[in-house]
Length: 63
Image 1 (cartoon, rainbow, N blue to C red):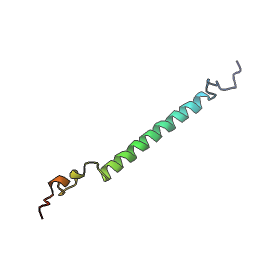
Image 2 (image 1 turned 120 degrees about the vertical axis):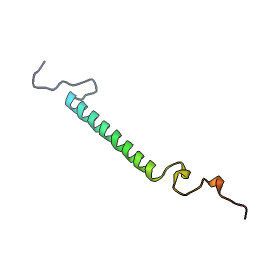
Image 3 (image 1 turned 30 degrees about the horizontal axis):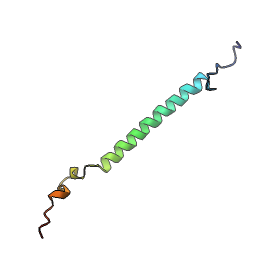
Image 4 (image 1 turned 60 degrees about the vertical axis):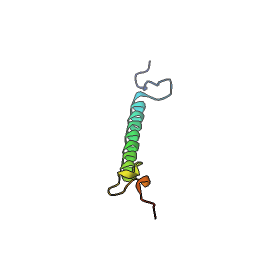
């Protein structure tokens, strides 16, 4: 084996590049989760969770 050459995995990537890619992937997953959480807080799926708003079926439509 040559000592100056990085060890290549079966995917053609050396270990440093694999570690870098896994860190980028982990960071991307965290960013996606934060964006989903922020959107969930701004636009909740449960519309009755808004303050002062009754659920749609509770609105009096007797007029």
